[in-house]
Image (cartoon, rainbow, N blue to C red; front, side, top):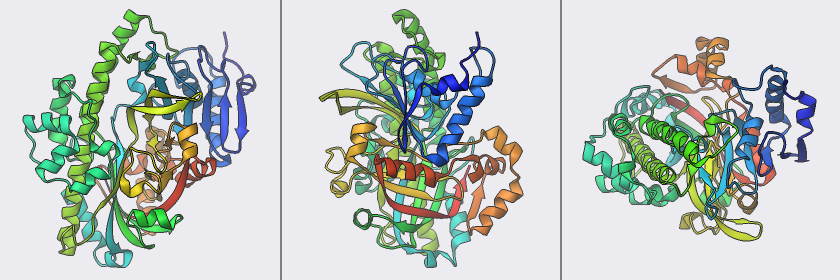
Length: 507
């Protein structure tokens, strides 16, 4: 039996407004709710080209599954409510598309939790640190500062941390999150206030993290890792919302900031891997059916479901400690070059966001407030003004949302909106989203060309592995400005600040 033609597939996809399409049940089997995805004219071609290519393939199983099909498959999970949602940076991933949101009703005993809806790099996230420096202050020392950052923060595959951590420290970090960093002197008290979940998930249980995961995580605490993770020195390029920017301590164009993008390293990857094995057995026992075996899941209230949520929360705590440790090291790197204390340089944390996580939250569904387990894979929480879970400093602006660009492209700070709370469970995009696979990037791009292009933009680069330059080049990704503009135009988040990179450190 052949796949449906592309034209027949399109019959299930309806454009609802200039930035949003709806996927009707029947697009894939067993959909319990419709799907939705947000794109503008500049981004939709990639998604539809993927679907066209998929429709031409022969056979029914195996191989690449386009992002729109994955959004449909997620719409078939037991207990899902309202919609399976794809954001403008959506692209194919493991089980869930990256940039896919799903909310499961915790009051429904059939509802499931799926590690594929969180991802392997649990609590991969971004934090932004401001300074009182200007771009002019950087000019004489930019190369030295970039090297200092590279020297202070361990980067690359297999990198080991310089923060002294013993087994007992790791256990406490998994349990306490940023409270551990604060106690040990690696974080400032206000850092915790400006962090999603205040830097600690209280349902964490380090006993649900395997010995193998802990062994992988012990030497990696305080390290950047590789892939799309980075440390960037950035300058404010545009201010769209003056009031929100001032609340964040951003006063002017040219102001220098530091962005750190990293996650839970090998520990989080192992937590996800361990859970997938357990959940496949739970699916057989509880007769749970999904459209894709990569959507392995377990009932939320089952032993496997609860164990995963406790282990995932511990891995999330590890990621917050990891980013806090690198913030400590970045502050030291700046202090060394400018011969001033981090406090004198005003190196305060603006915010820290997660974009691979599942959390229990209250949302309005069909006129009723319900407790939901919101899976955000490659998407960012974006709560509006006056929400009780965002800091006092941002109660009037909405939660800061940090959207990291690709190497050599701009990043953005957005704020959450009421419309986003209603339409996307208080969520928005997380970055640019890949357009080329890592393999295609390595084959299509030239190392020297990429370096020359970055140099032409005035961007200093330090990288541990030269092949990563091609994998993470701007050409490998969607246009982050088009992604952000789509979210802004759709009203699910609002642009506040645009940041331009001047130096990047990568694994």
